[in-house]
Length: 170
Image: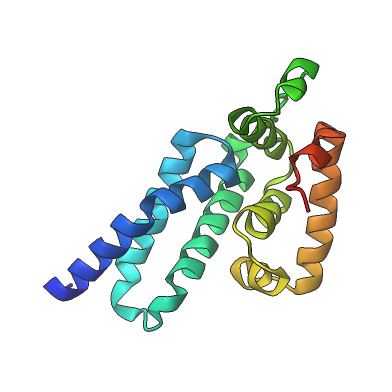
């Protein structure tokens, strides 16, 4: 890669690394695995950097790469594990401040199957619409809608009424 392309990649990396890492964490629920997924996504981006023509689509490309990485990992037999974290009444009661709310939400997301978790993260935490989420996941809009419905039901089963408390007012 020539120096100007390397500088452009470095600038993108510096500007987006924290956001990519946060998205990876929301998708997998573990900071160490999030670091691995973010690193893998940036390595893949670096490998394809010369072929990318639309730099405005880089964030979408990274989201899609992250989601695929997390979903693929969840399908590997050695990574199949059950998240049995249960939100206790004390944790729910302390969900009034932002930090506790994030922990409650992330713990709840851990209980949601990976594909549904990916849809919820992209729709509600990354702010993508149905079409954008479908494009990021490489599926139909109908699949996004059904996965959203099933994911919210799974999240509601874990969080109960706390899910309504986590919604922004308005």
